[in-house]
Image (cartoon, rainbow, N blue to C red):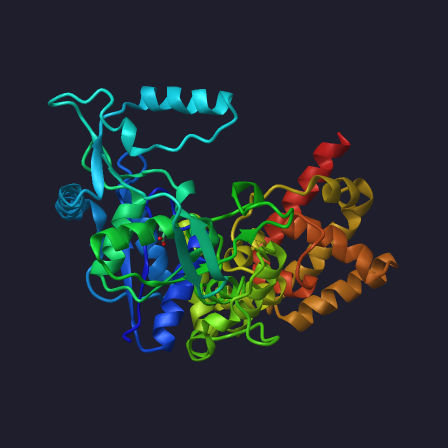
Length: 467
Ligand code: GLU
């Protein structure tokens, strides 16, 4: 059997990490078996679908390296196909026109719920309000008392009772298909062999099976994957922080890390945590998909990204950093200086953005002082230390690491205090906070002129505070 999978996003938002995981599983499954991975845009929700979301989704898939085969299929371009098939089902008495309005339906639902019953639409109501020219939806006739078997490759056999499924709409009054109808038709016409998707779609499986059977179409094998939960055990959502691939990209995550982290949410291969894309293709199989939900751990995701970051070739990190510097409107530094900043920040950062964000003081003079740090260290009693330091450091022709070290040593001798007591005020003066790379490195990277300006600024600050 030829393996054909698809990813079928609805363009109603950016690519959510849960949807990205679905895409990754489908892509890996077909790649691992030499099959085809196709992309279908399910844009039949006319109110919520937007082109910008489609573009974002496509860009995210490309960024993750998930290449699909052939043209993108767009459901909005296939309305005539769905329309024809729905009419055919009417001719064959497997579907019928339904004229009931939304208000009438609402009433019926309310009446049923008052009686403690579940309202399920049935054929006998179809002619209510029927009139020539009146808009109608098309519903599938669902026979009662039949068993519908879903052979799920993750969950095993699930049996549904057709009596619990109402005669559901397949084509809406505006001529657009419902999700279930379009998905069942397209999966068959695209010759999809396997559908891997979140288990929130399991309730749709019997409906799609009924549609395929009514139309005499083929049915894909199904694999429903457990959900991703937040650490509070609730479905992953905005409350848990960034939720789209675009957001992670903009925060400086690497595609390799996103791919690796998401695939491990719900799939495992022994205890192995880190996989290259090539290894994933070699090792992926549906057997590795677990039966229980997985928990999204943003701390672990960040840690994994840091690991990938430190494994990148230096040239790529420099290019990415330069792009972030430009994008943030910061002054671009010389390649030598940027390299030194990178060397200092790489071990201290887990994302590309953090390498720049935590090092803003290497780029701009007018950063704000951390309030607590300034209150503690930019004070009158440290004035002398900063003045002596300026005298020592600014006298050097060669602003080398060794000379800078020597300068600090001499201030220690002159004041009789230890390095820590000198380094901390210097650090706050030069970087705005008490946390930074080694003070000699910071001084060297900033260069003499910048150090001079910043010590003057700190002395002014001390003066203004004392006044
Ligand atoms: N458009 C659906 C979604 O985004 C696709 C579900 C499916 O894979 O069948 O959830």
